[in-house]
Amino acid sequence: MPPAAPLHGRDLDDSARCPCLSGETYGSCCGPLHRGSTPAPTAERLMRSRYSAFALARASYLLETWHPTTRPAALEVDPATRWFRLDVVRTQAGGPFDAEGTVEFEAHFRDAEGAGSQHEVSRFVRVDRRWLYVDGVAG
Image (cartoon, rainbow, N blue to C red; front, side, top):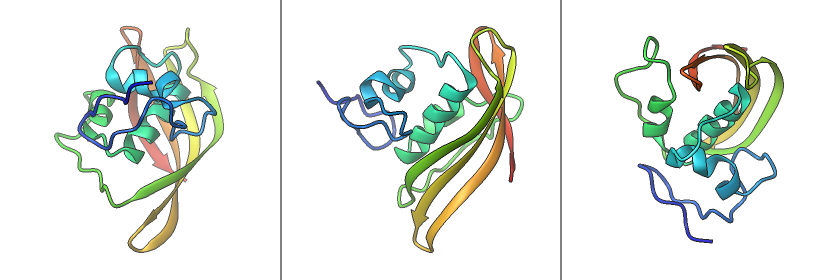
């Protein structure tokens, strides 16, 4: 398979394991979402694709999938932070026919200070059949 097109971050070959740990390859999981060729069908898929965007330092994708009422003007992703595991704790609504949903997750990383994790309950809304991240509460 050809490598994924770089999108303001690190490249990842479509045949590589997807960073979101769905069990799929990048080319059949988060890659098409990052390229804009398909929208996320559920809030969980959007959250997984956003995790992968952090792992690949793709700030542009994170901004594109952030609701305009809460989106920051700019976002810097630290390329030195290595995101290595995503655990989805639970989801509530956020399906293909829902208007809102929440996803609770824990994302594990390593940076210059050592290993850490981010536990969050994220809120998502569907606008014009497209899921967007609204905000999150750290847990």
